Amino acid sequence: MKYLAFGLGLVLAASAQAQNQTPRHVDAPSGPITVETVAGGLVHPWGLEFLPDGRMLVTERPGRLRIVSPDGTVSAPISGTPEVFAEGQGGLLDVTLHPDFAANQLVYLSFSEPGEGGASTAVARGRLDGETLRDTEVIFSQTPKVSTNKHFGSRIVFAPDGTLYVTMGDRGQKDPAQDLSNHIGTVARITDDGGIPPDNPFVGVKGALPEIWSYGHRNAQGAAIHPDTGALWLNEHGPRGGDEINVPEAGRNYGWPLVSWGRNYSGWPIPDPDTRPDLASAIFQWTPVIAVSGMDFYTADLFPNWQGNVLVGGLVSQGIVRLTLDGQTITDEERIALDARVRQVRQGPDGAVYVITDHEDGALLRLTPAAR
Ligand SMILES: [Ca+2]
Image (cartoon, rainbow, N blue to C red; front, side, top):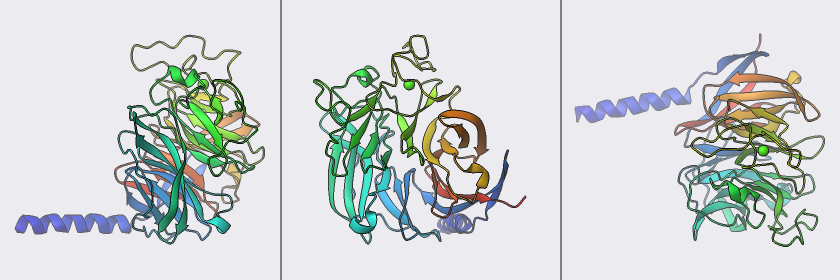
């Protein structure tokens, strides 16, 4: 009994500490930043979206969707979410709102869908009603399903024209990323109900799947729409070396596994050169890798010097990277250390930068400028 009481005391002390965490300061190269923990105790959080009322939707990879209030209150899991394949890198992944959410309450989720042959990336949508998703339906499934548990990609972002981009990984299969008869290693572009936009590049092309927007991607886990051009930008993991930022154009081939700035982890050579004139090249690459995940453009006033920059998360680099742009040219790079695996980085409606840390005890962080 004595042992039990001692154990319980420790648990209480630990959770009390987590609730009262004081903001910390990070001395970034461009100035000090205040980092607050909005909510902790999230299990491998992956996706983050802002509701119009100021609350936030956060996915947990094992298969839960939660609502986090600005005061840090975390809801019970939202019911009505799809069954997920929660192994390895798989599970409940990204979340986004329909552009007309205020009228239709539609929430979109990407996830690893179990099924015949293994699992694949899929997109479901449902209508948020309190803490329930109603009429949840799967509107897109990557084909084929395969038995690996990695490289699901899986960011979902709506374009200004109302179509939905779905980034997908190569599922560890490599060569099929060059084969247009499957969705392996592609970005798909679909309508809000999973249909095919008639102006997709491979509509009517024999042997190609009509959802495909671009291909030759290895594992794109960050994506955002450029605020001025409306174009999709994404980042994708390289192998040993060669994390990339790409600006995928309709129908183009981004090269994996034909070319890469990286080398494979074991035995399997990637031919030189790093890119070829017949393939679309990345606009930026990191070697050694930062293990890219998450992306957003910064357009708010709170960090005036960050306006027009792109923010990228790093799992291995344990922080965010702020890139200054001139068109599609990266002119400066700042590394902001957060000492945690960053899965997603988003600008919030208040102009603060929100960060999801992907750990067993993961967190939702809020970054604001600190007084010098
Ligand atoms: Ca590439």
